[in-house]
Amino acid sequence: MAEPKRKFLIPPISAAAPGALYQQILDGIKREISEGRLAPGSPLPSFRGLAEDLLVSVITVKRAYEELEREGIIYRRQGLGTFVSDMGHGRSREVKKTRARELLQEASREGREAGLSDREIVQLLRDVIEEKGELVNVRKRN
Image 1 (spheres, rainbow, N blue to C red):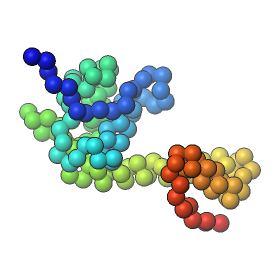
Image 2 (tube, rainbow, N blue to C red; image 1 turned 45 degrees about the vertical axis):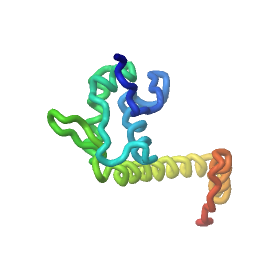
Image 3 (spheres, rainbow, N blue to C red; image 1 turned 45 degrees about the horizontal axis):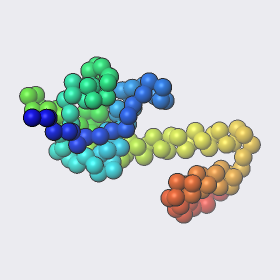
Image 4 (cartoon, rainbow, N blue to C red; image 1 turned 30 degrees about the vertical axis):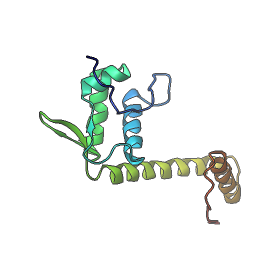
């Protein structure tokens, strides 16, 4: 009898993609949690199981899980497995929000170094958001 397919999915990871493999795993799990596909208490695959699925080493998965545990997004129970913590969604969202802020600060610095005004930088952000079909009102902060 065939083993049932796991419901846990993260995007494929690649050594050619930006970021270390463990970081790609970490980001994928955070995305699954923050988008509600992994609810609090949901079990995660074992180190070995996820390593086999993603074709990476167990050490790579272990490093990603340890980082997620350190951030309070997941927890491990000896003999039972690894699970999404009750605060996983909020913690994952907060971590993603902090990272988004850092990236926006970096983009703002780059824009200023390129000689763009605050208005032009905000317009670039609006353009990017429109391209994704997610137009929101970005308040003018000049």
